[in-house]
Image 1: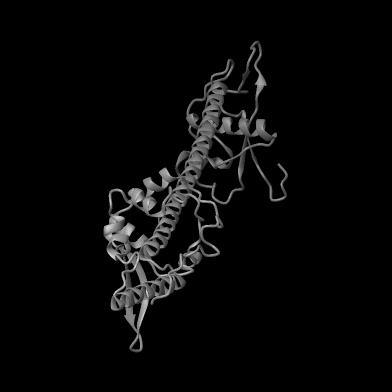
Image 2: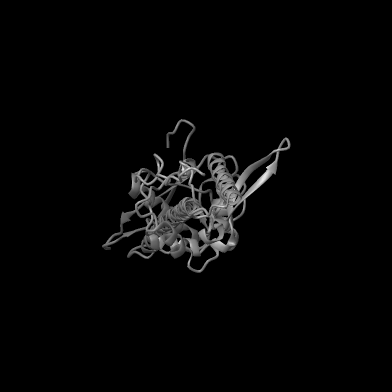
Length: 319
């Protein structure tokens, strides 16, 4: 007579609640799984872990041998109906090595992962809600779920459904982590763009204020409008329209640091290279602002542009 069948007991790492806490709730897992394509679901449920493949292949082989023995003796065996148990939803792929068939990986068939009631079916086989009372094990420990080996096809299927439950959860958790990292990166890029825009706006406001200051200086009471080209040092001239810009630059630099602003040469302001300018040291233009007689506002000293004092910096730094 065949030995009295013993009920499989949970292994050391299975059913005891050991393992990390699942980071996701059931609704998130369901939503993430349904968002996957058929190909993605298929690859998720292909298992090639060495320990897991070895354990599943061993359990499958022993159950088939037990079925054969019972059939030869003529004794019906409890749980011998493979199809009814759902065990046929899994397939073991073998390769031939040195005249020996070696299990390489296990896969779940579309009859399982394409079910409309996939989650409800897995929970029915497991006897409880998703990951309820079962450990959230890392992939390296999935092989322990087949220890000790199941002695019925129904128990074999239940163990395999635990592997499926873990594989689905890990896949969705990884996708959620990637999406969260992508969102974080997008937020950082948006914040950097906003900061750059704010800085550009500030610079535009400063330029606008400088232009307004230049316009105010040129139109202040007592200011004499400049006519024609304005002579500067070196025998060059600048257009009268360029003088307010030079004055404003000098005033702005003086206000900011008490230092005179070093401006481009007259030739560069006029857009042409003037004779005698090349090789000259940097030119510093300082407006001579004085109180006009009988006037309340500052004005330029004269009408011929001589109020623009042009000084050359020597190599020693003296004016």
